Length: 84
Image 1 (cartoon, rainbow, N blue to C red):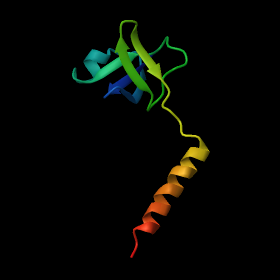
Image 2 (cartoon, rainbow, N blue to C red):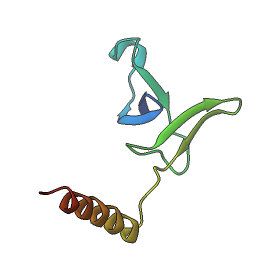
Image 3 (cartoon, helix red, strand yellow):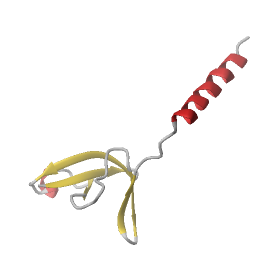
């Protein structure tokens, strides 16, 4: 069985495993890439870019909890400053 990643706007948006022929199963406008042999296996929301070495997948950038809290705090504080 092979595993495929559907790519939209340089992002993995779907994973699908099958023994079937992808060309017969899906519309030809959908971009499916065989990721069976790729380690680590790409996951949904990973970036996908095609270059001179073929397809390159990368994990999305994760915000550290500290950065997330700072971002939320800034949004909250800026909202307070705008109230009459």
